[in-house]
Amino acid sequence: MADTRGDGSDVRRRLPSVDEVLRQDWARALEERHGRASVLRHLRAILDEARESISRGDSAAVAQIAASLAGRLAQRLERAAAPSLVPVINATGVVIHTNLGRAPLSPEAAARVAELASSYSNLEYDLEAGDRGDREVHAEARLRELLGAEGTVVVNNNAAAVLLAVNTLAEGREVLVSRGELVEIGGSFRIPDVIGKSGATLREVGTTNRTRLSDYRAALGPNTGLILKVHPSNFRIVGFTESPPPADLAALARGAGVAFVEDLGSGLLSPLPGLEGERTVADSLATGVDLVTFSGDKLLGGPQAGLAAGRRTLTDAMRRNPLYRALRVDKMTLAALDAVLADHEGGRNAERVPVQRMLGLDAAAVRGRAQALADGLRAACPQARVDVWEGSSAVGGGAAPTLEIPTALVAVGHAVLGPERLAGALRSGDPPVVARVADDRLILDLRTVRPEEEPALRRSLIRVLTGG
Ligand SMILES: *Cc1c(COP(=O)(O)O)cnc(C)c1O
Image 1: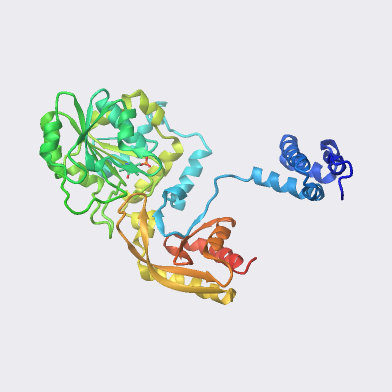
Image 2 (image 1 turned 120 degrees about the horizontal axis):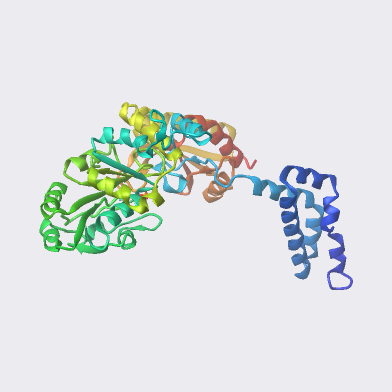
């Protein structure tokens, strides 16, 4: 296979032209399936790569490409046609996993979304009057009822709710925030930046570990727009700490005639076992907070959304803000939110709302499933070492970061393959499985795996452990 002229022309001749390829039956079949434009684009890309190999003098690579052109092209076209966003099995035990899409919806809520997505709806149409209606009546009426709140606003996420609240209530004025609450929540939500972008000025109050009511009082002035309290979510300051009770802060704000807003983060609607320390939205409103904001897809267990609830004058002002139009949610979000709120309203949330059901599973229930999976793997994979360990699951999503929920873990080792290799192979499966690696083992926590996903999980594990 020597390149006799030394300029690559021999190997180049072994590469077919685009026209030659397109005359092949297999290429016609691909064209039928994927369309001419896609076939041309990917074919040209493959031939370009082959020519690059020639200029590098890598004739073996060119020969390989020429010999496997049909397979390569088909594979690229399949990959390009496949959806990018796909379901994955979450075997991490982190219930509200932001990178894995936070809260899964119940089948009933998902069915409502599908129904609304593919049809026209009364989104902004009053069916009784036969006239223009208001999208606010759908999920929000239920939300007001549930929370006993005068007014609500639903926007794209909690970051948007905070932005809209601060812009509406304090643009051009100061927002008082304790230095202990200037938090960053995952992917670049930073309280100082959000306040800056909302057109208000941050006025830091107190110190990182101790902020007193007198600090807030001293910072209040004619230019104060609002007092903002922020849930620390993903961290805890322990030791010599102090912050004023929310009720005292509410009284101070009321006396000064400024709004008191609380970014509660997780949005717990009713107390959950194990999360007794978390304030619910109703707790927050009951202490005199004028407006509370929270996420729809954390502990509430619904779609991505930002919910604000509180005094009607404030929520009405937020709705009149032109920013609201840019931040509001679509019909699919409202359909999902309405379904999940109906589960909360009916007291069915512990069984029906997936994140709440998963958080409520006791360790014994997880252990039974873990044992069954471990037994199956031991029987099918002689190379594997499988144990069931005690461990803990996490709430995730910035809620209760120090809370460890007792669980049972399936710990998998392999005679040859390291745990990172196993984890990587699981991620590249169909469906992809995301697990943890710790103590030189692959670790699976079935708390976050639906029972109906277990057969697929078992198959993936067996494939990976037997080198299939
Ligand atoms: C999670 C969180 C946010 C961000 O919420 P998104 O819905 O992701 O925008 C803001 N504030 C607090 C306190 C949070 O915990």
